[in-house]
Image 1 (cartoon, rainbow, N blue to C red):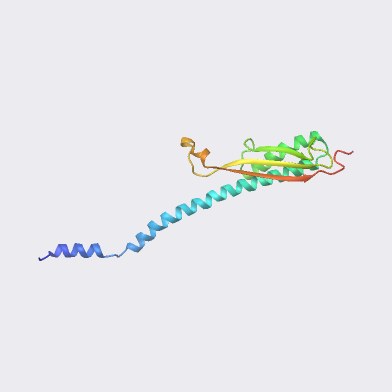
Image 2 (cartoon, one colour):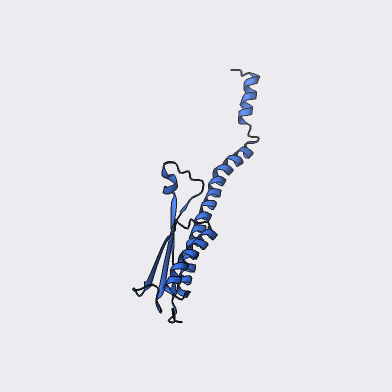
Length: 156
């Protein structure tokens, strides 16, 4: 069986691998690089949220423990939380903040330890709000901070 010259030329072109390395590099690069880049961006967003709630809890506990009266402590807490939330790009209204004292009782008081817990949910970037995907891919972050109140707290 004799093959035509055109068939031989086409068969040779099909077996020729010139330029395939560049194509393989582009395909493999896109398949591997895009998810890796998204992973870095998503982890950065979660880390920023974690650092934000940690800073909010730490600064709020410090502010409450260092104020001189109950009224000043109640005024300082939301101001500090809002300032830190704005610094880290968090929604101050969406933060869950709780204040407690140990030992239990009136909070804050002289000699007690102030415990401030701050929680938030960090939404992953580039996730559309279609079918609630943005809520499903949210990552909860929470931080607590303890600060000892001076024994002379509230003294003139």
